[in-house]
Length: 189
Image 1 (cartoon, rainbow, N blue to C red):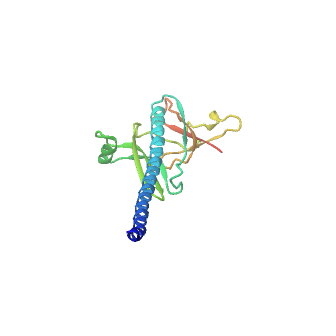
Image 2: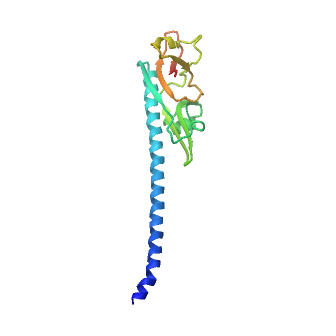
């Protein structure tokens, strides 16, 4: 009787090791999925903050600051946050709802070791909003916001990726303007 117990012990140990391996594998998969969802949540939060900031500024309700950092789980060289105008009624209706002819969206394309992620948010701003980059001939003047050692440069977000950094967003709409102009002042390092 004692001999049979000794013969079964290695098999029981083997079964226990196999079960433990499955439990560990499932645990690591769950941790990886949680990490991926946290990273996507970070992107969604950043996009929502930028959406709110842009909509406030586009309506001429003052200036706002915005800090953008690429989440560490996405490769900065292969990921992109940007603003794009869409002129396809079907696409605008799907993203923004309603029956729009054109729309402006905030897009994020992220690539990492665990896969890719795409997020698109509808911006409630006129499609005519301009993001001028050339200081000459535009209402954008970074000197207005510089103080001491802090300097700003004007960057365009129209059809350009948003570069990580600290920004001041200002609607420089004047009575002579045909459309809103949002100046994105990026803090120089």
